[in-house]
Image (cartoon, rainbow, N blue to C red; front, side, top):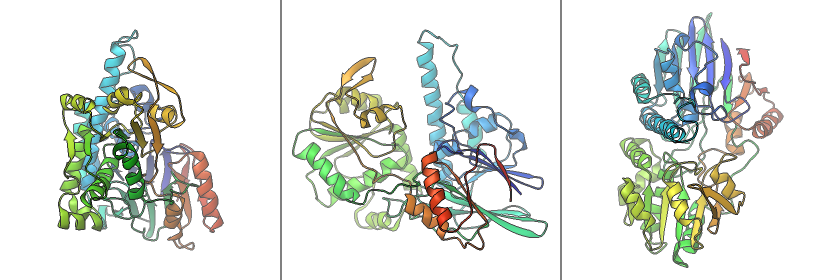
Length: 461
């Protein structure tokens, strides 16, 4: 059995791992590599022939894990894509949204001096629909036999509805070997989502390392942070609170947290707008698979009703309604995407409020270097929107309490749950090099064998 790490090696995005057994090739995740870009020239070439892949196993729906699946299909992959049912539904939403982003960029280029000479979209809607047709839904915690020698089990890990760690059992020459791929590990006590379940004992572990060397804030709870921010932004002063949030996962967690605050009467009523069509569709998926949310959300539903609906909460649908939100003059909370401010309706709200002294912008997620969100967080006094340089008068705040990733201690718990006498090696992927190094040092100090793969590095297991 051979493992080759083709993506997310010494970086965060582009997860893609090839596991080869005798006469069978398994691809675990097929993510978009943002460090390469999102156009054909950068992401369409695979280091293997896509037609030779027998099956794809998808850990969860986020684009850095699923976003290049339509390219794989377009380039010749004809097999099944195994994942949980929520992952299938959410992936369809995200992949179709990616097409819209590709086409939007193409439209902008066609209006520029370069005309249509730039790169073409990576894939189109028809490629997404062909990909969706290949999804096969697998239940959690039930071994699924891929063939006579290979079975797979999906273990719930929080992070996102339907997200799973993948445990593969492979029998070769009469010997059984087990290898686990964590995907992205969630954090404990996260709104709506279940806690990560412990992994069974395995021989090899391929682990993410996003928060290696870093711990989440523990000085205040999420509710305390939201209460303070809303009170300062919308109650004590007649202002507005704008929260950039990723449409799938982050928005649903935030809405539930706000529902608890206002349903318990902890603050006077404040109008809340969720201005993201993708978030609206994703929330319906969360309702569809309500049996997979955590016990707190289920109990809330039994006692008070839908976690994602409450008085003074409005889901904005079309562009006309979005414009009316910008013209709303009373104190309010606006939740909109994209989380890094690089596109979407959030830019409209920023344009109208970035110079508003009574506006607060609260970041609840990671902003990659160079993005508009990153520039605001680092304190740039002027930002460019709609070809205008605007002074930043709005207050800029940040919290990591809604990060969907487990921190250093959570990642270490995954490893320390494994028997040192059974686990032969830990492979660290999906993290910035500084984070990977910090996690590798800690794992090594616990007595485990750990390695940091390079792109394309192969390992005989």
